[in-house]
Length: 183
Image (cartoon, rainbow, N blue to C red):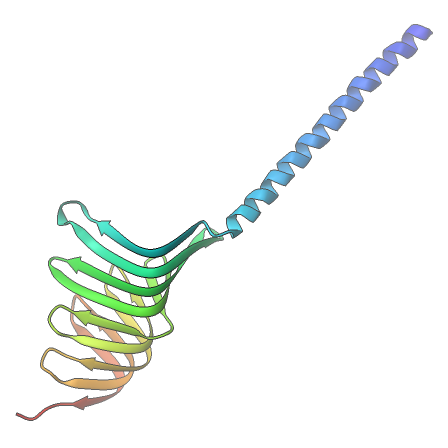
């Protein structure tokens, strides 16, 4: 009888040891998933007084961005960049355009401007918009609110809600007023 008691106690000991080990493994896996969730909420990147170059193979520098402060967050697999004092210069087929603003938010291919934005092109076209969204790859600007524009002929336009396509040079807006000089 003593032998069976000792055998049952040994089985009970190992069964308890396995159960405790499984509980610890489960708790460690759960803790690791919580730590990765917490780690994703922290800022993975912060830059101070930076210059960023995007180089495109044989074409050379395609995009240059400068700023005084930028930080990046990732939430739900979506990366968002917050940039102070942004100056963005694009050079495609030797045609340059630039955007300047005091604050911008970039999500993927889009840059959002809530504090005003200046846009200029290398052939003297220039405009300012109160707010807007710029699509980097297609080089399309969709403005919201007031804007003014100086075009290559020297005319000045004012209006609301400008849409500008760099490749087709199409500008569309609402409530347009043109101030032209007589020669």
